[in-house]
Length: 270
Image 1 (cartoon, rainbow, N blue to C red):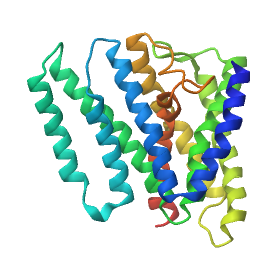
Image 2 (cartoon, helix red, strand yellow):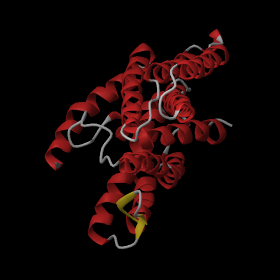
Image 3 (cartoon, rainbow, N blue to C red):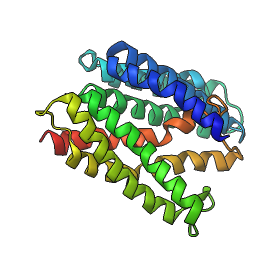
Image 4 (tube, one colour):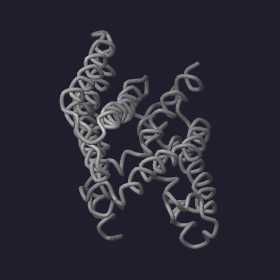
């Protein structure tokens, strides 16, 4: 398992870094593919519990948010989201099976949550110095997870959320906060060398951003764990060997992107 995780990371990390660097259409397409897969995994997960969300409407919602983030001047969000909500409701009215109200709710909420999260990654990348902020916020949760895993495995005793994620401990969580803050500060200081001395990014912002993400972003992981535990699944899929599925990979990244975006707006560029 560990070997598979390492090999998958070796393959994926350079690709992701390259696409973040390119930005534009390359980043839009990567996010569209990744979050489309995550939406399909979400629909397949809840289908294991007897629900029937409509994947097509969920995918439309994901792409609607991405296109609106990339081209806000087109004004796509309100009319298109209205069409998706009313269209998915109409579908359930004429195709009632099982729990049509719950199916409609899951169709809308799944696409809304994942589409909103995907759009914030794009919004973060499109900010001034967005390449550097993206390559700080996204790795930040991974750095925190690494610290939490290492300490939790060796010294973890107090279970954090045993009914959702039995292996998570408070000792690991606190270690993740510390390592997330410190290592993200170092990462941001490194990126400043590439961004230039006038760049807003730096160790101080990296520290505070890393702490915020390490404290709050694990809620994204617990949210997806809540869905998986309800249906009795360990991973959302086996797409990425050793890492689970696309939904497993974006669960905390969504929160990291939202926190990163608003941190830059409110604290780094007042």
